[in-house]
Amino acid sequence: MRIIVGLGNPGDTYKGTRHNVGFETIDKLSYDFNIPTKNNRQFRAHTGTGKIAGKNVILVKPTTYMNLSGEAIRAVLEYYKLTPADIIVVYDDVALPVGEIRVREKGSAAGQKGMINTVARLNTDEFPRVRIGIGDKPPSWSLSDYVLSRFLREEWEDMIKGITKAGDAVELILKEDANAAMNFFNKKNKKIPEEQFTTRFIRRYTESEGSEC
Image (tube, rainbow, N blue to C red):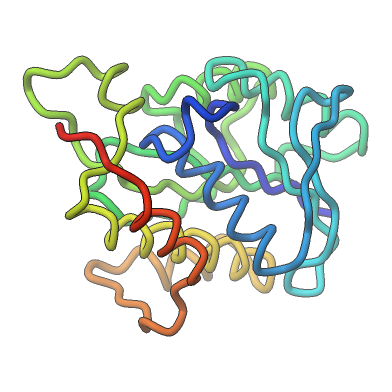
C-alpha cells in the first residue's frame, strides 16, 4: 500500500491558491481514478482508498493546515503500519517556474513549511516527493502573502499542465519507481499532449477569477 499526500490548507478561503496545488493534484487523482475522499477525524485529513496503477493507495489531504501537515501524515502511517518510504508527497515550490515539476527520491524541505513539519514528524527526509512550481514571488510581496495568492489568468494554462504532470508522475512512481519518474519528468521543457489535460481542471481555473500580483 502507498500513501499519496497532497499538501495544502483546508476550506474555501484557500481553494485555488498557490499553496494548494498539492490538494489540487489529489483532487485530480481522485477524479481520474474514481477514489472519493471524505473527512477522517481520526487522521485529521480527507482520505480515500482505491487503486492506481494496480497498487492499493490512500489519498490524503491533511486538514491540519499546512504548517502541521506532518501530524496527519504520521497518524496515517502509524495506523496502517507503513514506513516513510511508502509515501509520496506532492507540494508547491517557489523555486520552480509555474507549472514545472521535479521528482525526487529524498531531500531537504527547502523551507517549505509543510515539508519542514513532515520531515520533523517522520524523523527522516528519505521519501519520494513531487514538487510543483508556483513561480517566485514579486519583490514587493512577502512569501506568506504570495503563496496564499491565486494564479494570474496568464498562468492558468501552465498551472493546469503542472497539476497534470504531477498526477502522471505519481502514477509512474507507482508503476515503476521514483527514479523512473525522475528520468521522465525532470527533463527541461518536458511536454505533455493537450489531450491529457483534465477538463474539470481547465474549467476550474478558467471559471475562477485570479488575483493580480
